[in-house]
Image 1 (tube, rainbow, N blue to C red):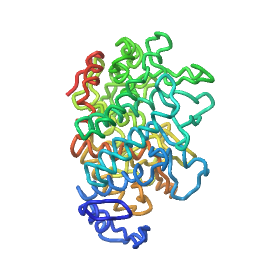
Image 2 (image 1 turned 90 degrees about the vertical axis):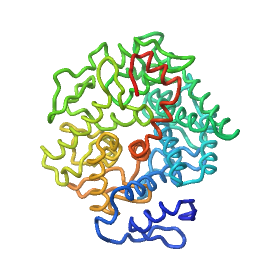
Image 3 (image 1 turned 60 degrees about the vertical axis):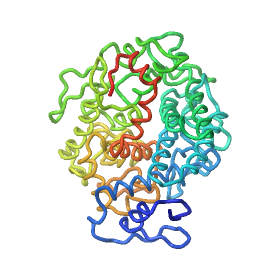
Image 4 (image 1 turned 120 degrees about the horizontal axis):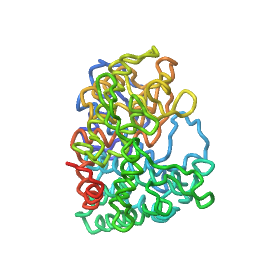
Length: 457
């Protein structure tokens, strides 16, 4: 093992990250000028190693120091409020737990370092604000207090909590057969997820889950969780809960909208999507819908009464690539190796980029890179093109920056946790199936899927 940038890194990662990637580091660990070499010098598995390593650092080197949680955002350019530096995100931190597991298995950090970080995060979560077992969207990483996400969004966020629970279950399965200390952490992670009162979020027995509840505004937001979108794992975990599970009809009438989730007769570029959003997305919507629920929930052979999830996610990804090739709005930079629209930073703030009505010429790297399991060849070509074509305009200390626009010559040096996490995790699921295997080894997950009549691998 060798030391690099004050972090323990195996020689393989050191070689790929320093030599092949073309970065030069001074003795004090500061990033210096990137050299311009042969654009084909970093491809294939070497580039996967490099992208995973640097993106992982968002959750390691870039984590909020007190809590160990993932910062909501990190701006390399420093242009964000000082007090924002301690705002941590629940969903992004759930993804971060899974990225930390990847970091241990890929020897980016030692197992002992990872265990120390897990302990810090779990202790923080145990003491942080919760509402009927659910955490808010944002927390103050120094105090554990709720940070408001909107006018009425200052309490429980069930979907963000589900993303954290997905990470907690994965972590439990990873640690449960380890040392005495690791088994204690596994039990702590287990207790945190089991304390979530999923059934309470049906508002006294409604046949649907509700996204938000506030101690100050109650159910004011009145946001039903209905498919198809990024929230599928919320219902699976709600059905899987040992003590607070939902009736299967909540899934079938809520998530599946009484069967209206079926996208009958749909076809785009020759691909038929099984599922439709409640507002009918002809192109499948932003691509994060195919990622967030499936970091741990294995979509291979996953099928319910309404359709096949692997087919939906693969076709969704291929439709977006075909859309970029067609490029109906004529944006500079779109082609078969530069594609992917999803929620990210945008030219004017933040946007859920998607074909047609929310296409602003902005490509978001996580869209295609987090689709690696669905489109391995196409995502590899995208990754090689982005890295070797745009260099350090697009790739920095925590991997690919969040979004860019060739049309507007816009390359902001900014990151979002919820976009970086799926890159690390889904590349790993493509390479080894690690996170899928861990999460799907949970007996409760099996029971939840069976209660909802969802078949799985």
